Image 1: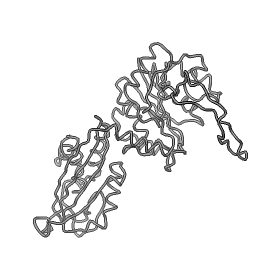
Image 2: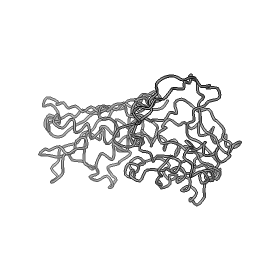
Image 3: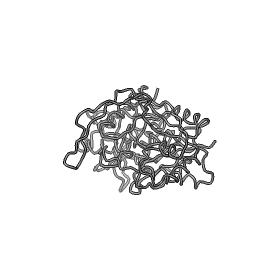
Image 4: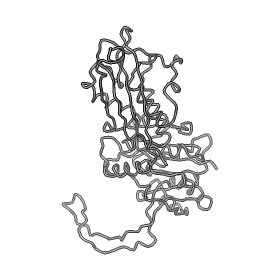
Length: 402
């Protein structure tokens, strides 16, 4: 059977704050939506992935999908509608226009970043017996029904307990929700005028389809409010129990190429001389790149970007560091900390320290609090003491899944 994965990412997510829709805010060094994309694209049974986005988010989405593995599975994003139900229908219609529409589809919220491969496996297995299946967790807390008092006609505020509710047989629905493709597409078409259906299982039920409950996990929660990002960050880091470190060291001599800027840590530093090298000779970013590659046991910068390759002539070294950071993300890991030290008599690093930290954080997609930049001299000793060049050493601490 050909399986498709539909990610709904057209909402505004205003309760989460942050200035941009929550699906594009950072979690573990990458946009929230990227976690769901990675889960879908790297699953061996998923043949195509369709994302539904808001028309205003095209640039944010484009940035979020850069460098994804198995990107050939990713169809062009389509735009959503005025409601989640309408957005799902638009996504299903987009999948239906593929040269070969899928046999089944899993519909997932972009704001649930902790989907596991086993969840996808169990949902697809359930479809062998039912036209629909959803992840869900049983309700274990005592339920109370609150009285509601009209507060000036503007909102309803819970006041007093009116009574309890029987929790027996109650489950909390999650996503993905999986269906035979033709059946759920027909169900959405026939119920498109309904406004009381809160998820795709409700759409399926309204169309007379049987939907099976598949036990999910509390970890698969939906990021809704600002506090949920803190919970998600803790959960993300707790899952990365393999902590590693790598070191990098690089040296470049001063050169005299006219018009060549001095690049250090991704920024132009005013100075009378520049560094010589095949690329832009950014000694700081080269050391950081090697530190990350070392932590990953993935070779060194020369292996990935050989100086004999004309493609890297005068290349910006931010590409090298971004590549190493992406290799880490592809393995499901995250940067815990980067520590960079320049060794030189001149130029002075202190006036540029914060700009350098911000640029490194931007390249790697991490918070600036995870980046340290320092400088020292050799008290006039050695080649740096003679002002013949600049050296840099770096330490990278990373987290990987166990």
